[in-house]
Amino acid sequence: MTLPPEDKHKVVEDDAQHFAHEHPLSAFCLTTQSSSICRACRQHMAGSVYGCRQCMFLLHESCAKLPRKMHHPFHHQHPLTLVADFAVDFGDCYDCRVCSHRSRFMYRCDECRLNHCIKCIVSTLPPEGQEMEDSTQLEFFFHKHKLRPLWVEMENSILCQVCQLKISGEVYCCFDCIFFLHKACSVDLPQEVKHYLHKEHPLILRAAAPYNEGIFQCTSCTSGYNGMTFNCESCKFDLDPQCALQTLSAVTGGALRKLDIFPIPTL
Image 1 (spheres, rainbow, N blue to C red):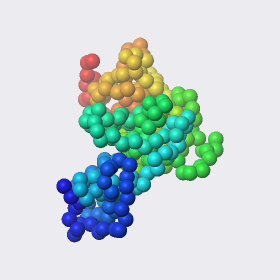
Image 2 (spheres, one colour):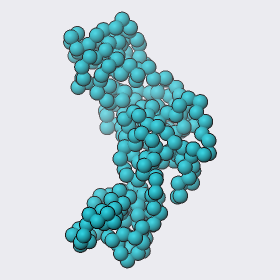
Image 3 (cartoon, one colour):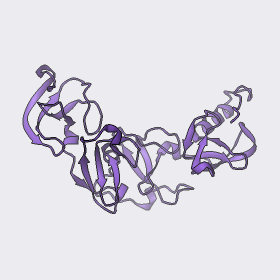
Image 4 (cartoon, helix red, strand yellow):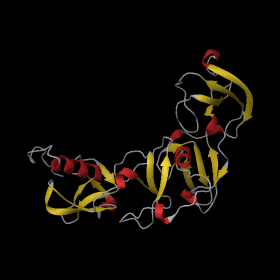
């Protein structure tokens, strides 16, 4: 295998030796979208990249120039070292402690045996020298630490604890607990609701279901979750936050005139 044809890339006279590959890597610029994948971040290649002329080993320029060591709020006790392992099957690769995805490239603390994928590390790296004032931090009612504001631009696989969608834009986070919220999801989030799907008792917003090690099945969408729930403990009734708020707003907004059109599944 070789690099893309020359009409699809512009070669730059800049070769580099990368610790993760035995051959020198040549710098070039892809002028069109490529189906090739960066070995570090697993995203499609575009723009400035480094590649091996012998074996199609490709890295984004930004990934190729990542520091070998860095300090990050995810693990402030020790510096993290960038490692790569292509000697094992992908199924035996490292699991990221933040998003649980597997990757051959990780920022690792060997002393604590902790792995963090590149996307989770880079996308959440606070601006250098930024100091957090108490006035900018959020006190979330059931989380023991204050949440700091963060702006996330890079694509990642970290999920918001409320909507369970990938974080982006303005978010609040606790690095110690790996707890993230979209700013929009943190606004006016009720601690208790009276919901038409469970008229018998109010539903309390909890960090996790108080049974089954926090694992629950949402009564509305029937999906399994391990996170925040609007819960009735006595009835073991759960709604994930997105279902609870969307179905509730549909009723209060007048979208549903008959409450029995959505039958409650029997668990």
